[in-house]
Length: 287
Image (cartoon, rainbow, N blue to C red; front, top):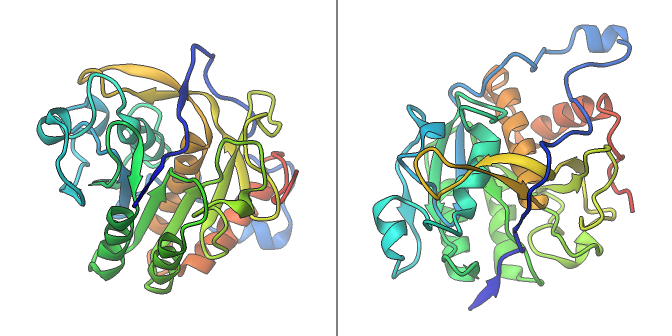
């Protein structure tokens, strides 16, 4: 079975804005003793990008790209040679650059593992997604994070795989979706164990397209985000969508795990909640 990936809109917009997780306005005694994640870079943390792939020769990933794996066939010629859809459609390359790219990435020293489970037409193969999630859960790579910038209708098999991964100690970050509806009606956004991320706009408000509701944990920059492009080894573009808000949280989770490498997914979420509370962005569950 397959379902369509959340639409990725690419537009000529200015760079993202609206919120900073680093600067609190005031500190309580407890906050003063909390770890400072702002200077960490994700070193030693493994990020699995389950998507269309990642362009291996892109300059944004030099020195911190792990092995890539495919969970369906046949791949397109570009996916098989450069690692992602090219010259267009390289969704995974753009997503990875937000999480851990050398130019704009949040966790620039994290290791990226491209797991291909989406084709260049944007179709999500359910069995491929499940197998990719299970592979990370069963691996010895820790600390580990899965980024799933995908979504659609309800798919119980994917939801169950996300729950298994979190139970195995893997942090799973997912996009809320771009349909301006309740995220609780979408897989994998509805999974309570996942960190579900909606999009904020340049003004720090909920983006007009973002899914919302009680299943959304954070609203992070997802409008006018500068990203790497799979068009060439040094191409950039501008991304719009919760697809790019999710890896923003993935990068921050990697920053937490560099300092607290044995933290459970629930503990990572606790620290992310504290950082997010300082940001001034819309509160979790906002409509």
